[in-house]
Length: 256
Image (cartoon, rainbow, N blue to C red; front, side, top):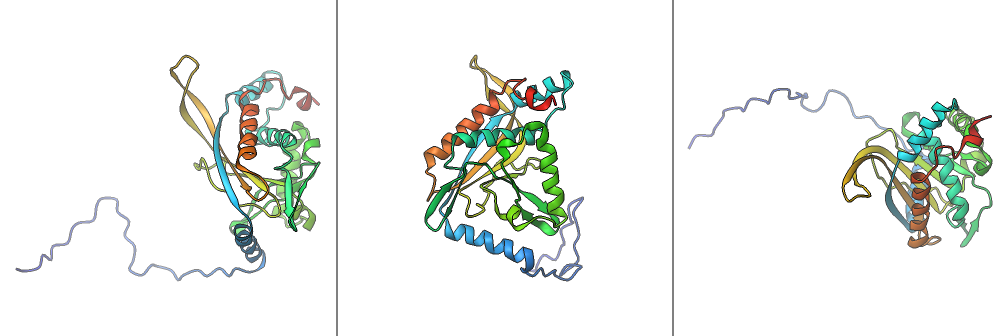
């Protein structure tokens, strides 16, 4: 029986790539800062017992606060800065997560030195510390965060700023990723991943359904230092803060 030599037509809109590709492979050596970050990520996974809890929070109360601020003539804080402020408040309740583990010793820190993940060119990532974030009021938070980002991108951060965080936040809020698994920045024992916002149908109080804006939260923690129950309690408390926030909760921090 003769072979069928008929060629099937390519579907409309198909992309035609030249055989073997049109450019040479790009080689990126793992050295310098890229090599150091890669080594730290590998060591983090090898040297700790990492586990991630995933949850979601509705943003209705946060958006109501922002509308209230506009109506009251106050600068409306971003969702990101509101979340940072609420995370710092929640850590005051859960010192076991604002901690580091070194030399088989857990240290719970009295101040929250908040690591804020900053993407750099060439797909590099650092998480400099905003020291004593519990003392930074919401009105000052955007400027403090912006200064950290600018210093990081200019390569002006000190070793202390790059390594001194006690808890880190990694934010993918501008993406379509709702949940992810952030990797611990050792010796820290916890890191919170903030995912993108999505519209979701949720149950209402009358047994029906309603639409709500929901954000994903992913807490990775070192099971050597923190058990699953207190990690879940931290997320529960944070979500309660997010969803029950009063519209005027931060007026005193934004008015001056």
